[in-house]
Image (cartoon, helix red, strand yellow):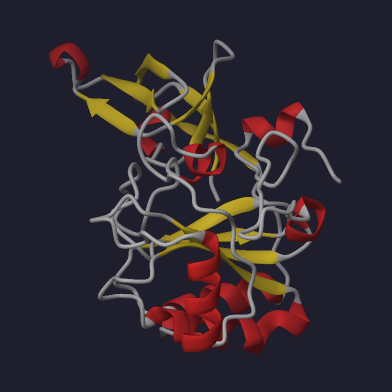
Length: 245
């Protein structure tokens, strides 16, 4: 089983030894195999208005499996108790109703203090509107490039077979390159970026306070996660390094 080095952990990579996963049947999930593929992580539920998305997720899985893609379903009962069943009940529902062939994890928490370590990192990823943070509802989708790198976030109502999801998957399958650190003024930092400041502090930016202390020349970069709270003041024209998926 592959393990992530400290740099991979710092950059938010997943499926290393620090994010163990168990399958719905209680067995270990092969993390090395997941790290080698493009993965769409989706928190699923059996009694939700969005549950029919299972059909689209299964088609995505079958359409792209031979090219190195998999859906990873994560049963979760945190949203209006819409995944109340046992592991066996969930397995039977997915198999008989939607013929699901993609892997499912054991039931996990995706929000709050007991959220799984995988979701502590996934929730740092911003969506297309620049918003990171809590999973909004069942069927929120996180697209990971090979190596376990989160690159796109799609909110629950985005159809798994929509043009934007398919194009994002195909772009990764057609030759994704890992992001590189680039120097830029602090004013160009966005929510979701990983940043290294001139003083050597590294953080995953979840919020930005502009006009810090009423000064338009200052801002504060903030990491507000379940594992760390950090606020780093900076001049807007200070040079920082940015890692952007």
